[in-house]
Image 1 (spheres, rainbow, N blue to C red):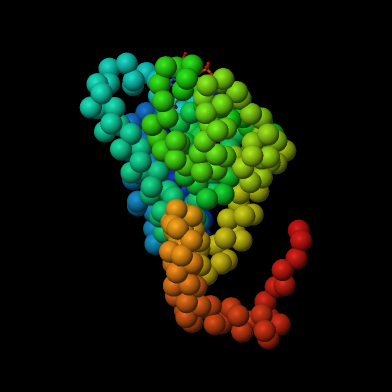
Image 2 (cartoon, rainbow, N blue to C red):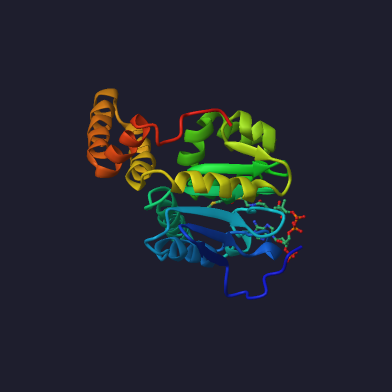
Length: 262
Ligand code: 1HE
């Protein structure tokens, strides 16, 4: 098992060209999310340079994330518990509604708060060691990192209910079938796949990426008439940008790639 050689650095940040990689760096505790980890995650997303167009979120070691650091729970009062959740919400909102899309690379356990974290990302890539669980029922607690909303939006509240009540753990293929992950790679190849996807996303117009990540979740919550109006506004804002005109002309002049499989 990988050891963290500098226990102060709980989230490693690496920026290469326009792609940032943020890695939970607590493998000896299976990347359990203490408040310090959550705080470092928030700061890391906040402080990435303006040149970043895509981020990859990963976990060091054989598990992506074991969820909430249970050792922090025993001393928590009710009031502190609410603040605790709000700190997670703040950090995870930076991921979902930031300036750039986030791809989550998942291996091994993606459980409890780990699944709540993964569900804040825009694209999820698992490998065939990945499994998903919500053991809150077994631990006598509840979701508290936004999962009631985000995981329920991914797979529906009925499946969340069943996973929490029964402790049902899903493997990577089952996760793929119900939308917990978008891709499953052979073991150890999820990062490579994420980098390939990151390069594609970074090649899009930044304004389109911003609209996709920010407008779609809002439109999904709006009544149809509001959703269509928001969509029309977003469409005209993106279409009006000079970059869109250049990209469309590039296609019409046969300078841009066609849509194809593979
Ligand atoms: C932890 C945690 C943790 C590991 N908090 N310390 N999450 C859970 O209920 C999942 C609990 N964890 C596990 O079921 C297993 O650790 C794993 C399946 C993820 C990995 O198993 P394994 O055999 O590789 O590792 P391990 O030996 O169980 O754990 C290694 C160490 O990490 C060990 O500590 P050590 O001092 O004995 O070395 C574990 O105690 C420690 N560890 N997971 C604290 N989660 C905002 S609300 C969100 C609500 C939730 O997330 S509930 C779900 C909590």
